[in-house]
Length: 369
Image 1 (spheres, rainbow, N blue to C red):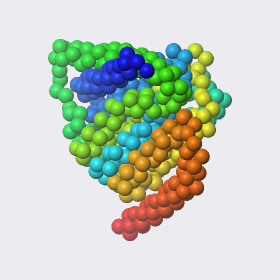
Image 2: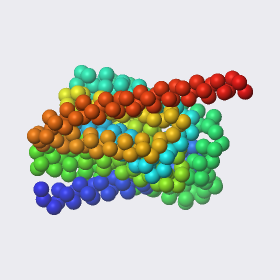
Image 3: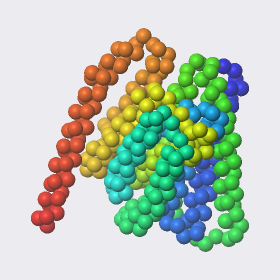
Image 4: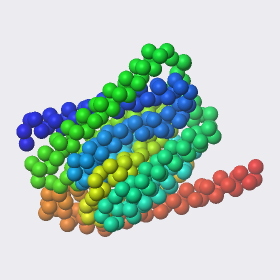
């Protein structure tokens, strides 16, 4: 592996992060300047803008004939976002999930993840599959804007503090924001091309599949904007932004990124059998795991955040062992199957029961009052 290949990957990743930052900054300032509420900006522009690297990489990969990277990028990013980003954010400070939309978005994320799996069962995300998925993001965005008008004043104040309400701007200032958007998009396009080329070259040198490269290096790299946004928001106590950014980005990844990639890629995106049998079920399981965690007092506790991080480490360890065909893989798989999986299932069953009981007590208290 030569220095040029590594430099190509690193510079491409840097361009992606810088491009996403410029895009989010310019778009959010422009949106608030023309009268769009900070809450809507946070739920749509920022959540979608931080997923711009995944969008650029997946479309570039699809057009270049590297469908494995395109699929692995999205599936891996969703797993990374939930387990590592939410886990790290909750480990820093417990996240009280008070945003009402999350109650709807988490079940929606589970449904969308299952829909993707069903559409991919034939081994391909084709043109019409892409149309179905992309139609979902259009409907979701309209729904989010409509629901934001009903959001509590506390949540609106949090988003208002983070993104601010712009005073009327001069034409020069508006042109500056548009320029930032254009520059951000240009960096995203160039960065995605270099990152994909570098990732493919590394996969060839190491002898690993493009699926694994997409699930690990590319997925983690393109998720850096979500990581920065959520961790910084958690340290500032902006819990709704930290959680809403991850959930909104995961929805955008499936509906918009794979939707557009399926539409523009000639012949559609081919889905590897290994992804159907392991990685996509893991993505669905991770989304399902959010239900009891989020609904126990609407809080993600520190121990739950640490557990999420450990699960991501275990998942990555499995990918590495499976790719290298290491002798420890059978033992590792048995430990995961016989010990980790049952303990996890028991934990979430207990959490679910507690959530139901807590809900019933709350309903009873409401009726008495």
